[in-house]
Structure formats: structure tokens, C-alpha cells
Length: 212
Image (cartoon, rainbow, N blue to C red; front, side, top):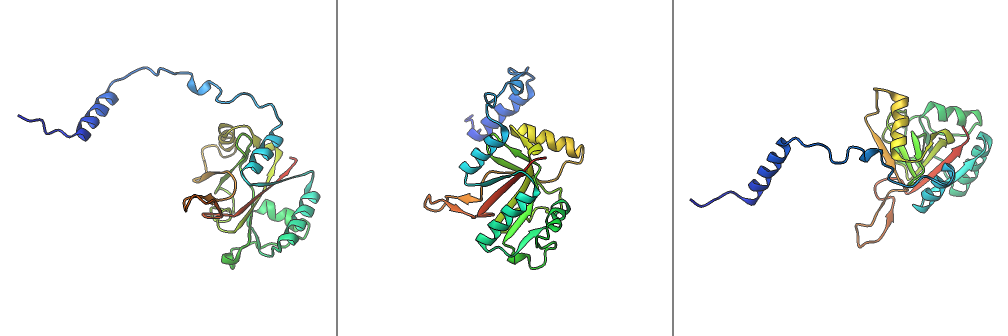
């Protein structure tokens, strides 16, 4: 009798048989081995270099006054008027220096800038770790054409695993339902291999780093 078993069925049968066989892990200590050599630069310098290499824009501020002054200068240069900020900790800073912002989502379709905090800064690849745990939710870092992040030096970590460790320490068992890692402005080169910024999110991404 001719065998009518398809190649797909044969492959699936082999996979099922392999799953039934119990084998010891050939690399039990793999996760404990360092993937990268130890960092030789300060984390703030490493993050800034990697972040700007992916077209992010970075500013280190010694205190809140310098941060507000830099933000005012930038907003004046870019003619920003509709800056949306929903997180109480950020609102408190802006209100302290009487900096105008939108605290609700009224006319959100006209938003020019979304201003948020973050969970961590990943120095190794210049990434920003965000979650939906704060009042900014999922929208504020995605919809406006410009995303500004205020971060603190205490949030600087070397690798992604360190960022997840910070989140686990902060939230315990109540891990946010959305955690995302943003590396530079939104981009795509799907059409004729031409790089386009702002394709699926903000066209510009800023990080202000404060001591603390």
C-alpha cells in the first residue's frame, strides 16, 4: 500500500515525538553567562551616545530649573503650543514653574507634544522602557508627533534584564499589562527602501535626564 503521509504530517510527528522525550538541558548556565563585555563608560554617557545614534535627541539637566529653561527654549524654537501631560508627578513640576500644558485629552487630535515619564533607560542600546501603568497610558507616547520623556539617573540601567528587574521591584505581582521598549523615533523603510520617520508613532523623540 502506498504511503500517503504528507511531508507536513511527517514533520509534525517528529516534533511530537521529540516533545515526549525528556532530556537534560545541555546549557544549564547559559542565562548566567554575560552576553556583552562589561560596560566601560558611565551609563549616562553610554545611553546618550546610543540614543543619539538612532536619531533620538538628548539633554542632561542638572536641576529642574535648567530642565524648564531648556524646554522653554525648545518649545519657542519649534513653536509648540499644545503640550499634553497627564502624569501627576510631571504636572507638579510644570505647574511649579507655571509652564502651560493640557492636563486632559480635550482636542487630543491636535496634540503636538506628548510628555511622559518612563520606567527605565537602557544604556546598552539607547532605549526607553515605557509602560501603561501611569496616567499617560498607551496613547500619549504614540499619537502626538513629538514625544518628550523626563527620566532620572536612578532609572539608568545597563541592559533590558536590568530594566525588567526595576519594573518587578516597583510593581511586584502587579506587572503592567503593556511594557514596551522604544529605540529612537518611529521609522520604516518598507516603501522603496526609503527611511521615513514618524510612520507609526512620533517623528521626534526627546529625553531630558535629571539627577535623582
